[in-house]
Amino acid sequence: MNMTIPPRKEVITDIKNHGGLVAAVLPIHYSRALLRAFSIYPVEVWGPPKVDVSLGGAHLQAYICSIVHNGLSFLKMGGLNIADLILIPHTCDSLQGLTSVLIDLIQPEQVIIPLYLPRGQREEDVAFLVDEFRSLYTRFSDLTGKHPTSKDLLTAIKREEMSDLLLTKLYKNRQQVGLSNIDFYRLVRSREYLPAEHFSTLAEKTLQAATEPRPGIPIILSGILPEPMEVLTMIDKMSGLIVADDLACCGRRLYAPGTSPDPFRRMAERIVYAPPDPTRGNSIEERLKYLTEMAQNSGAQGVIFYEVKFCEPELFDLPSLRAGLKEQGLASIIIEVDINNSLPRQVATRIGAFLEMLDS
Ligand code: SF4
Image (cartoon, rainbow, N blue to C red; front, side, top):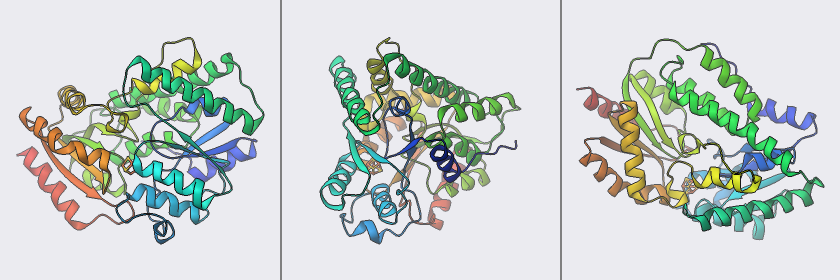
């Protein structure tokens, strides 16, 4: 299928030409709707790969992950100059450290706004996030001079909910939409910078072009993000078929619609009740149940944990999680990468051997 996804630069230029503001947003969870209600367009920064990391390295310890190293280096190269603000969710200690380095030492031109996230799914966690979103509302009002009403907020929320429903539908029909692994994730990851309405149009077109299911060795991809993206082409070439994922940038953000008529609560519900994620405090048991059901529903035969080196929240769970999966008859493998490096040859060898083992 022929699909044209507008490049990030073109989208940002278009936003600016139409008088919108741009927020550079670091991983993982935040409310797109809250930003959009102020005509601030989120453009996510997951790295990016392949930058001069010596720029960020001067301020960070060597054992901080490449997402943070690259993010800071990219900022110092001027890559975020187009952004009007930088939103940093408190996903992990490394991102919290980055917030401090930016606020206390580097002091870039853009305002730095942290977002604290709760670590559970109790009523107190929802209430905490409601308060966080209310204080962000005040900060965005101060910044833009705008005061969106509840109705404006709900309109923005419903636009994002529609886009996320289409994203979920793409996931459910992923084997029928005729896309290779690389093309499927190019489309899914365009949600990181495309305005919701643009993404919805692309998703609808893709869903209309449904075709025969693709063949391949069915696997789940877990981890933070599929970077460098060559890994997906490599899996395509080795006849691997990613039938479901537990990736922080993708499947862990299949947010269900909220239910509350109160916009702040509705935005909070969507994140608090999202699929399990170690950075939001879900237990290993919850993740194990989720991954086991995911494998049963998708027919996956094994899990590739494709991890960013030094990512503590991910790596900490893996020994128990893999042992639990093994008990359920699910094989798994861990691949650790630095997103700034090309894929080492040894990664191809290990993924190839894993797929062969599943297929035998
Ligand atoms: S890769 Fe892991 S350690 Fe790095 S920013 Fe993401 S969650 Fe934090």
